[in-house]
Image (cartoon, rainbow, N blue to C red):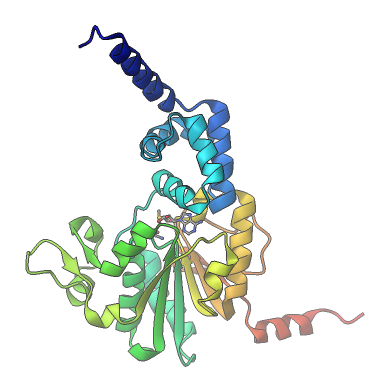
Length: 305
Ligand SMILES: C[S@@+](CC[C@H](N)C(=O)[O-])C[C@H]1O[C@@H](n2cnc3c(N)ncnc32)[C@H](O)[C@@H]1O
């Protein structure tokens, strides 16, 4: 059969298609980078080209494109569905329960204390991946005992629909429990009968809500209303400066006066002019939107002409 010239041609074409689809040229990399940046705010340095090539190769084939060039045309013409898939393929959804434990404990002891006079509390975990962060925050707020459960709402949003579906299930394997905090695990994530996985307790599930949302699209978060605390950890580090500024401005608008923004360890607003105050919280920096009283006080300190 190998001798059949038609077969040989078909075989050669397949090999060519596979070879060309598996190589992402510099110009193609720039094209995809711009599309992902416009759509999701993400930014990939040039050293990410081999990784992007590897990760998108499967999408090239799944979309029916015969090479990266063709795939790019499909990305441009295909609306958000393929863009979502491309973002999914190129992003990291790493997360676990009680990640950055020090910051979370400081949040429970110090930030919640500053908000205790509020009648209810709403918290937004922006870029929550598969939900462990949302449930951890929920467990800490429940355990603090400051707000009754019916006055607590924790929202998690992510651009990945696959992650949001996982978060809603609330069933996690051992890798999600790699940090300390075992008492918290036992109380809020009881083991399933198989002895391996843990499932979020009903009392915790009742206060946690998940939605698909793109941080670059302001409308996606407007339905959350105003929130008292925003966690956006290990997300903005993957954005370019302009997108980061845009998202931080949106966070400022969403927060109630006196509300808090908590970022990941390697993220900060230090090089960014914002209207947030930076506060030291144990070993961390948190950002606070000035309260009405702060603003009145500051205005009164400005010398009169
Ligand atoms: C590394 S995970 C961080 C998860 C969690 N915040 C933590 O620190 O453990 C980053 C998440 O950001 C999400 N993400 C990236 N770009 C986004 C965007 N434009 N809008 C919403 N989520 C985004 C990714 O899908 C991913 O799940």
